[in-house]
Image (cartoon, rainbow, N blue to C red; front, side):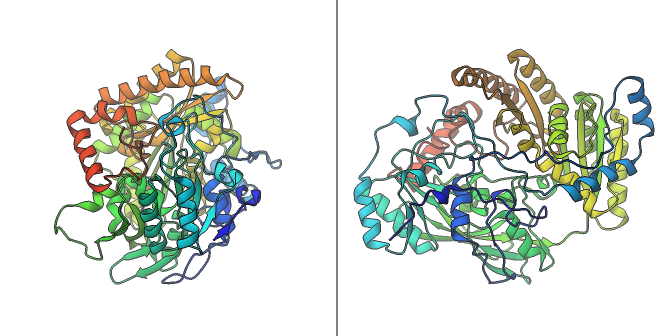
Length: 590
């Protein structure tokens, strides 16, 4: 058994790359190249380990770029009224092109995260379960080729995901399997020695679902990073779970195909993590969430059995729907070791529109108007003033800093149909009171406008310790949710930057707390604000999580949203599939 004890395995891998390339930007898997089809994206193994574990180390001033003056959209007073009427899209394009020339897109380094805000949590303080030393000896004897991290420094880098102020535990060890049979044997051994298992992808989650449990074995899937097959005839791809979302997109795009799910962290997050949380993204308003793209799964169950579900059929209703059950279960019911995913023919370049509004209400009404008009854009995203300014401070896109809100609207229809769809969306925005409207003139401009939205969370992190939330409401009630968020920010005297997928009602209000604020005080204020936020979302007929998952962070709210009978049914399923309670205990269900 090879033991990795070098502290360098904790280093964050950062390299410059073009946005959307899936290369090593933002801590992605370095050298993840290879021709499409059955060949692999093996990547550099140590880079993969570091990317998966060290998601919260180091800080880089990614926005401090000296150079050419940009043409800002924002100004004040009488000049503002004139500017909004006369400034042209050409100025916006100049700013965007300047940004694209000057700034490398590896802008996702995470500032140091605050330590645990509470000394107690079930995963951190319960007595360590099982015979950990016995398990490690058995792994060495029965899986001698498996890479296992046992050094405390290495294990520490797998303690957290990206959820701030969440108590976590130190893993007993971190296993890095490369094949399904290794995963199955690990699960059997953990059952034999009664040691819990925490499955983990890149560690970019925002619910604590992949955070460490004291004394548990973390199974990190970053070495299972092969794209196994691209099937043109059936429009599908077969992949291992450790493939980075952007790398999968790149592989199928080279074949003229398109994989739709695209979380904002797509350059870093893995397919396995996306399956675990049923991740969404910027284009799910049109194409749906990860579950909608899954045709088949290979899953290691709690007893070590390997189960295959689904396959290559477009339609298959034989038996119970186990795939929808497993996708989004956050590793509590089984460990996914292979996925067969739906592809589409690559769409044409998108037509892209930015619309700026004088109030959040106006932006919310524009969203409602677009939906009422029957428009189904591929992207319908919102950013509020706090987020606009944060993005512009870091990335210097030249956004309208005086606007209260911004909508990003895109169409991927062919030819003139895209122009017509964006025209209709612009008309709805105008009725709602939009001021400045900017259209991208080519695919490069559209990509940079889109990238500004993708990096909203990273920009807000530069303001302090950021805790992103994930509430959703029926789309017609987005204006009410925006008003509720404003009221919560005022009530608790806490900065909130709101952005998200307005087209499907899923917003990400992000609470910003001071880095120098005492942790106990910050955690108490955050808790109170989150309680009000979740209460407001449920009162509007919504949900406490649209795409990030319940995990550990929202577990106490599951009964309040679903009701005790529904949650007890979930517990019965958990007991049936994982009677020993080995798989990610304490996540999703209490």
